[in-house]
Length: 174
Image 1 (cartoon, rainbow, N blue to C red):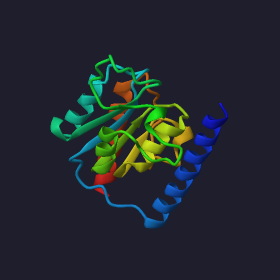
Image 2 (cartoon, rainbow, N blue to C red):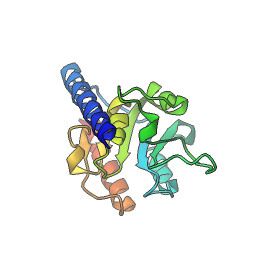
Image 3 (cartoon, helix red, strand yellow):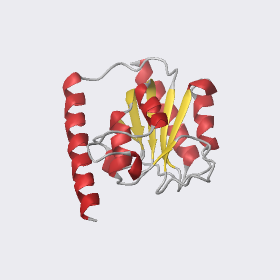
Image 4 (cartoon, rainbow, N blue to C red):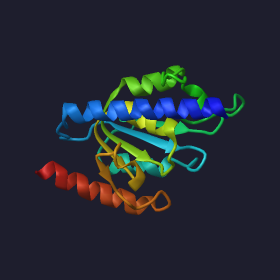
């Protein structure tokens, strides 16, 4: 329990430092969305297929959609449909152990959707380390991480999808 507390504090410090560094760099222009990254809580949203409709709405090809899911505990006998991570996937120093997660974080994306409401330091760390021109989320508590927060909640995906498409059209016209 004490080690978990130390790990959470270390990760929180890394998140704050990374957010400060990103603020100093300034924002990039979005342009056309060609690649889409999604970070989800796989335990709460195992059916991620409706998220692929978002890619179709944004004219992003399926081979340019990358999904990463958080699970409480990775079970070796379970066949996860997407790359997953857990608290055990991250060292106390904030370094990621998993090769598939490193691959996800190593790419650059036009749009990252943080489709979770949890105040989970490990999920937030993945969101912060993901290199994306625009980060969108659904939780007001994560507004420091996200460039755009749509308060639709995770239970109403269609409303989220409509709002995101609307706002992206507005952002690209300016």
